[in-house]
Image 1: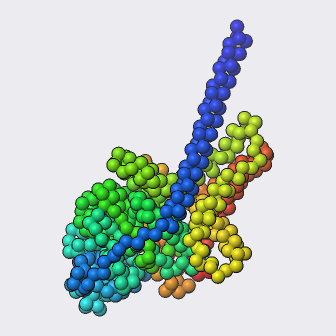
Image 2: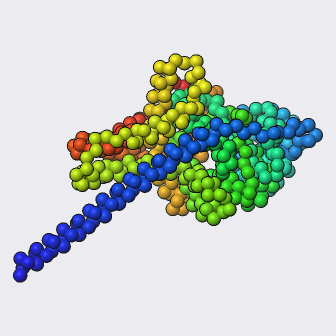
Image 3: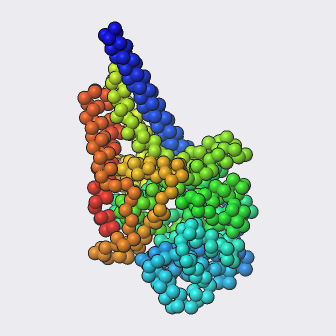
Amino acid sequence: MVFKLHIYQTSTQQMIQTLFANIFYIAVIILVIFALIYITIYVSEQVYLNIQSKKPVNPKLPIFKTDQLPSITVQLPLFNEKYVVEDLLDSIYQMEYPSEKIEIQILDDSTDETSEIIKNYLDRHVEAKAISSYIKRENRSGFKAGALASGLEVASGEYIAIFDSDFRPNADFLKETIRYFTNEKIAAVQTRWGFANKKNNIITHIQKILISNHFLVEQYGRYAGDLLLQFSGTAGIWRKEAIIEAGGWLHDTIIEDVDLSLRSQIKGRKIVLAKDIVCPSELPTSVDSIKTQQFRWMQGSAQVIRKHLKTILKSDFSFSKKYHAFAYLSTSFIYLAIFSLAIFSVPFLWVLNSMDVHIQYSGFFFILMLIVGFVFYQNTKAELESESMLKRIAFFAHLSFYLIVLNFGISFQNTIAIIKGLSGIETPFKRTPKYNIEELSKSIKIESYTEKADVSLLWEILIAIYFVLGIVYAFISNNFLLIDLHICMVLAFSSISILSLKPQNKKG
């Protein structure tokens, strides 16, 4: 009797183990398949937008006489910008616009010597002071959105131009941009970002390519296809009436620019991308600065999709517009998909091995990377027109490597940011420091504003080791289905760890 009971218990235990094993197998397979599906959707969307971006959009723009120009308020939201604030003010006050029709709002939330630098500047420039409003808040409630909202309450202009501290608009910026407001439906005009320090180091060069792709392919492709797009927070102009109509600047997300863009377009307004107007800016020069910026953008993107997706899906937009709106809002999810695929690909190999399925090599992920790399490469061809085919191929390989390192290397921290955004977890607002790097001496240490990223170096090293073990297991099990992904992850996380330790604020 005792023997029979023992057999029964063993059988039950085996059944339970088998059940849990099957559930685990199914869960891993489903997660990997969903990640691959989303990556394929993302790549398809990039290809679609690349095709759309080739369509010319040439609106007929009026030429205003001086007495026809509308009034504009220029808002300069600032927080501890001692390295760049004077150059910003110089460029703003050199813009060509009738003094009686322009108001400069200096929205200063600084807690360092920036405030004193601004006051001294205005005291030295009497004409500038005459058209300026200096607004100093007691606290940083709502951060940048709060500063813009406080300025909007007293703004006198019909239109609101916004510039972050590191942007340097050309003298004709306002006159050229205001021409795009050809009808009442246009809520905002976004210009393209340029980069004064794009050759500072490899980090800035890769960012230049990524952000140029955002404007020339993603943003312009959406604009040409009459799809939803975003105001990028700076170097653009809003119709004041459209801001108020959409509910004003809100700070329930940390990317208030995208939030306002969506609310305005849901109301029936449109946003224009003036890609031929370029406003120079400064790119982050270190990995820590990029991580800080990316974490904020990814968390904010997740907050926005959590806030607006349901409204967009219930709107009167066409199915096509809704689909591309989802693809646009979920663009940040590519990091979640890549990291999830990578993490679960190792147990996925174990599942295949348990099922006696052995695949030598599929090349699926490598092919996807080539497609995406080629899309980004399109934006660099102008720089290589005089180069030989061999140099072009070498540049493409060099570019692809660093794109992989930078994007895959921050996939873990961006995944954490997305999860926090979707779950409503709030984190302290971390700014991207600006240093006017082109003017600083190489010997100057500029860490006073730098904040460390949310993800520790130890995690990145452990993840690199994890994927090394994944490669080892692929050889042991003779299953090389996703070995290209594992190799990329090892390169990315080991490289990003080294770059995090190495200062990147110098040229070279």
